[in-house]
Length: 467
Ligand code: ATP
Ligand code: MG
Image 1: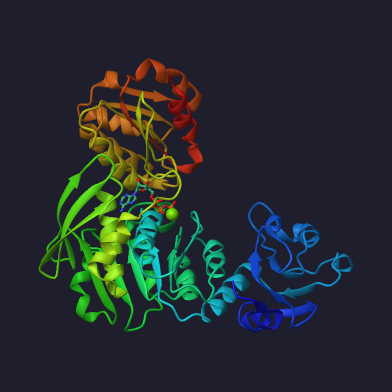
Image 2: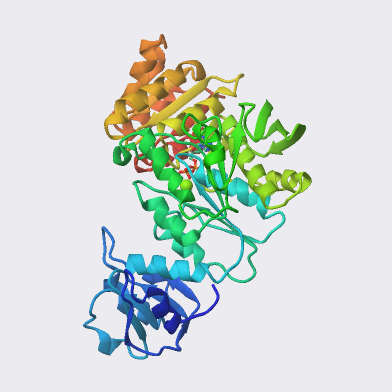
């Protein structure tokens, strides 16, 4: 972060929604990092007291102060002012919104291309793929971990400094207006939508609703902006027909010949994938150090971003080879006893199906799918899990489930002829783990996947240790 003065914090949050005003302190006081977790506070940081679902940041102002922090943004009167000697305190009506305004103000200091990434599944992977490409030529900022919401995106933006030449920002959402809010802060020049699935359908009513919400990423586009979409996606592909009516540029990727970049063939190897695409009538070969067709789609979007930023094919090709996935996303572990596809970070029916396709690549092994609930599915819960069940029939030999909703995976598979003696369901994770030794065989390929709340890393840990 480059240093900001308190007077700039006031300028960014004055009027409008936040009504920023100085409670005590010095307009010339400066800060060079912004935190919302008091444990990360220190000299030169500004601590923003956020009122969250579980806790109120105002309770931690004194602990931030004790760590040396002297600039604060609050939304309440403080009865501990006498204990905050030497501090500068800005009071706003709503610290969450003011933080967004400040991030927008801060972003405006930098004239660099920004790539925004959204979609139902594959945002982080696409972001990391785009980062691999773009950072091969430009010094690039990206969100850490999964910091993609109304707090994570501003915190990411505050990490910009004058050394960066590009930023790749993942934007998540669970309802209408959230991507619009983030796009207003980030103002992406290039935006990628990976697909329209069913995650968060509970809040958005339908896939059409999800499509509309994701399209908010283009709300602040100019004529020079570019939207890059999965052109094989049922909803996003419709945009191609509207191309002439759209004021910005539209590019798409996929197998359909009408896409800007067309997937011609894929060669699946042990831990990498080679693929050939057609680009402006020329065939080009690329390679990524990961497996799964969905990752080829993620890579194609990254190729389009690279081209849009003026990179040549060799630079893009080299960049893709540097791809590194974040966290427990499709992390393949050979324990000697088993081949474990650890995908416990999170799950939705769409990403489960993508992972089942990866499991199916292990043709020489018995394929075991250990699947748990996909959460937040609302009325779509049964249908979503049944879709997974249908897809697991051809792609796995053994199905093991845990959770109320995941039971439908096995039920659907059985209805489609899957051998009942190879379907196991457990009410608790503990029972599941205890029984694994009776079910698994040496050299099985095992996919482990469920929503974050199911904490299936316990199963992966068991598999890693199993002798
Ligand atoms: P979140 O909403 O938690 O931020 P995300 O959209 O960032 O999720 P990732 O973390 O990139 O998604 O990927 C989650 C899982 O989805 C991966 O481990 C993989 O199984 C699957 N996945 C990744 N890319 C795609 C894709 N393009 N299509 C379908 N599934 C995908
Ligand atoms: Mg993510």
